[in-house]
Image 1 (spheres, rainbow, N blue to C red):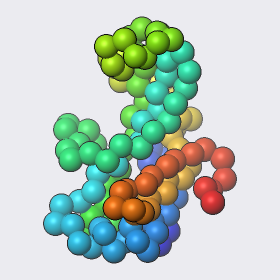
Image 2: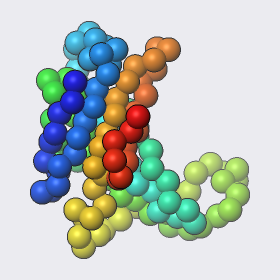
Image 3: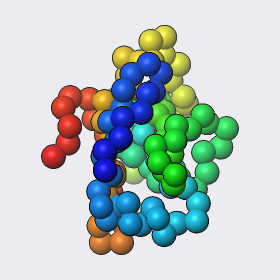
Length: 125
């Protein structure tokens, strides 16, 4: 299943595999996906499965799927991430957020685990 949703005036194409659709139907609560764009010494993108969205504004994709986008920045840049765990992050205030929103998001369910990714150019294979 593929759905297009509007995120701050920009289209986000969400592709949900058949296996993920089946698992979503089995859930009593919606699955919450946080698309995080992480700025530090490097730039990283990651999708988290969350139990709660807190006070974040979420976007409904389907009956049991909601998403949001969160750009963050670290307070410090440390080459060694082994010292005391990951550094604390703050939400990154951006003046033109639509420039940073992803173009696509994929969701699958394999080996008993949710698999998700997002990106900016073209659609994931």
